[in-house]
Image (tube, rainbow, N blue to C red; front, side, top):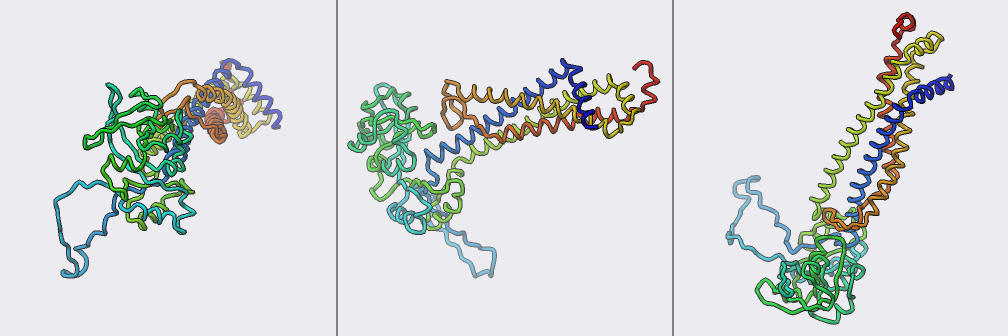
Length: 422
């Protein structure tokens, strides 16, 4: 019996080739759009996460002291709590990590040595970079280059120059590619930097780097000592300490422990990029809405072809029921037709999406994708997306076939055969 229903379903589908082909093309195009969109959005998130993990600190020890526990004046007896206000006039104090060597000892202690791979103290200063008649405000970051290289792999990001040249000169700079383009800076050029207090200093460009992280590529690296001089900090103070950890995804407990041990606020890369991650989450919700909308449209197309088939094949259905085919078998027949149309369109859509993803991934144009700069678009090749979209498309097509199949199951053979208009 199943073989008979299978042959009938194929005859129905092939009997209306143009309409069937049109519906399958619509299903395949919707499948291609869904898979490509999911691949693009997920690819952007994966690329952002991978770039941040490889080229940025996992945890930053900020020069901000943890707030003291507030005094509770409302619980307990009237004389059991006291509060004193001293120096209530707010002061805009500079955030800095004092005696940063002590913090480095803590992160390298046995309690954290296996969790923290590398630590790099840094000093940040907003300076004015000048070359000829061009000038631009830039963030200067003073670092110990060997420590910084373990965290950001800056040595591998150099497009010109090398770290050896940077180490030899106390006034050497590593310039981000964005800054180099804006100021027309090349290797071995002289660059004037003006500190916040108005003092200027001539420095030599020892390298130009490109990490793909826009914030980093729009900055300048200098030695830690030079950064302290420009910012006016003593040798035992820094703006913060960058950490690279063994588990960058589940790093929140480690950040809390370091905050408790050091007394300074420790932020994870997830916290510092919360806005970007929230944006990706919202894009994900939009993609889910798109999947639902396009799936419904595809379902209407499948339902349309089957409704027409039921209408045109009413006499055939009546004859089949008069020969002993049950209503359940009629439902199964048209549901199976919907399944075949959806499956054929979805599989062809997967082939189209492979081509679309390849084209987008190999675009020879460089584009700024949010906080990153990439050549071509970041696309994800996760097979799970193909499977999920195909399963959803086939499921919607099969469900859509239930409505015309229900109509076919309710046809009464006697009434249909007596109606001469059919």
